[in-house]
Image 1 (cartoon, rainbow, N blue to C red):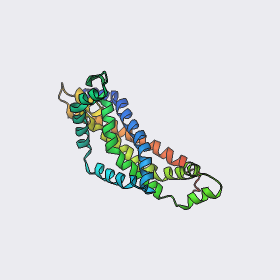
Image 2: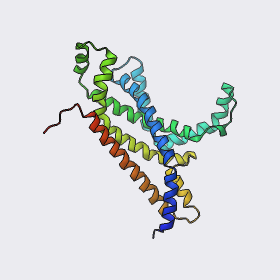
Image 3: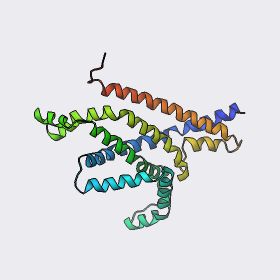
Image 4: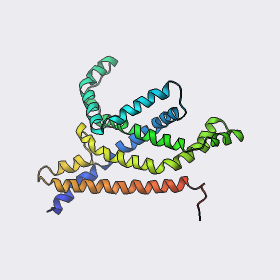
Length: 234
């Protein structure tokens, strides 16, 4: 039976960790969107040499489970940090680095392949004639891409990019294997004394559910924004 007071205690502990999960999720999303766009462009328009290399790297990253990548990153950080510092002659120790940065780096490796594929699918969905239309009215390649291709692309990818964002938010629950305190770890830490782990897991689930609803609502708002120029069928 669920104890109400323990549930409230775990829920409060989980809510306190929301900012950390949001920072990890949003920072990773921004980094992966920027890098993913360059990767998607290189792979879509088959940039010589770069495109085949990126194809291989993306396929390699897709093959590894998320928790394995997180564990590898924290192990490399733990065992090779001092060598890295010595090589660059930096005056700092391993304790001076917040583990959240290592977590974001690892999450980028996990999320980048999926997000770059989402963006590439958006580019492939835009007819090549759109570029020709931009050139016909005197626009440069960059202007055409910025003003014509990007708005149409984001309208196409918003639903799938939302799904990637939700997956990324759920993946942040795995960072506790790196020693980073997140929503799930905050709830389970609060459950230690009373051994009320059912309440802790339920509290963490509710917090993630609410965050997911908020992300879905933001996604719908973005869909409406990017669909302004599209004539709706009556």
